[in-house]
Image (cartoon, rainbow, N blue to C red; front, side):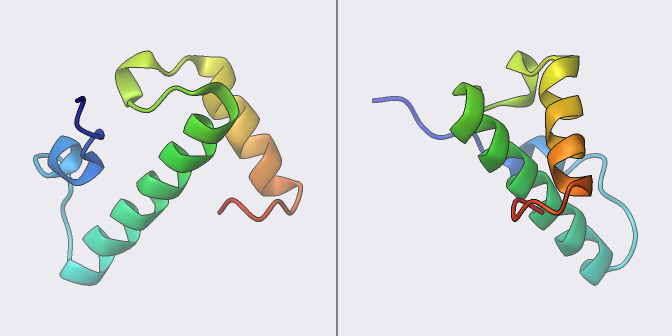
Length: 67
């Protein structure tokens, strides 16, 4: 059995700021991760490509429900 990717553990070393700011960034990262995983079945940042993030940002600015 493979464990799901832990975005919080991945980002813990680079998140700075207040607790609320860190939590907001973590929520946003998990939202991006879920959207890319649903669309391309890529569940961790090491497998993401530029096209995946571009797709997400285009969807978000188009009023999509992912963000």
